[in-house]
Length: 335
Ligand code: ADE
Ligand code: ZN
Image (spheres, rainbow, N blue to C red):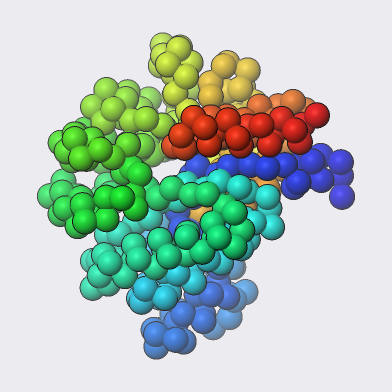
């Protein structure tokens, strides 16, 4: 093992962009399919993995929504979430902020309460067993209507204390943030923080809409902001955090060669960038593999790695006291 790999693996870190449904490994997919008597169009774990070749976001999303069809009961959501926490505990992740897509389940007849109660119970157990702190972010599927998003927001209100914020994911092109301006305004009045996927495939104008219309507190991806110098300055000035997902960018073909991944350039520009896994079961790596991919391909130094990890803690939705405690652990480690 290289010295850098060892350094990354042992480093305490946060993850701020991970769709819990995207952590469904093929082994668990088969187990849940059998438990719930659901047909999946694959015979073996290897056949599932072999199907994970994507040429763009939509290609991936089609397989991702099909994969989550095995999730039915509260226990399924518990098992999914606890498996992810077990994995990241081995990777020395000490804080995670998890997305979930309720509409991917309620549209199949699964109750909102099964989804949230299963995830929430696993997060509590993860805190007790592994000491991992967490927050939950509910995403609206942007290919669906504003009205359906409003319905989802209503369903979430009884669970207000379990959900820190709302997000926006799924097919970006053709579904600009402006479509959800009123939903996000309502969510903000209910006290939710806001994030949105923007500039993953969509143009810089979508990032501006996320800032101006959705009033986001953090930007998911944001890669295409680099095409607009004024926008870069604005993001730097306001120290808006970007949740960058290196292996996701590569697998969805936004970045053709990891040696050209923009995260080093972003760091050098003064953007507050963080490293995350997005959908680890589909993109070939959890958070450590994402750090290692950029470290290796971009010749990052240990100071770069520490700066990325520090951004992760600073950009989290924790209290200042919690952030300071986590940053102190990182500083201890870096010295
Ligand atoms: N849902 C899960 N992963 C996603 C991504 N990378 N972009 C948009 N929607 C998603
Ligand atoms: Zn994502």
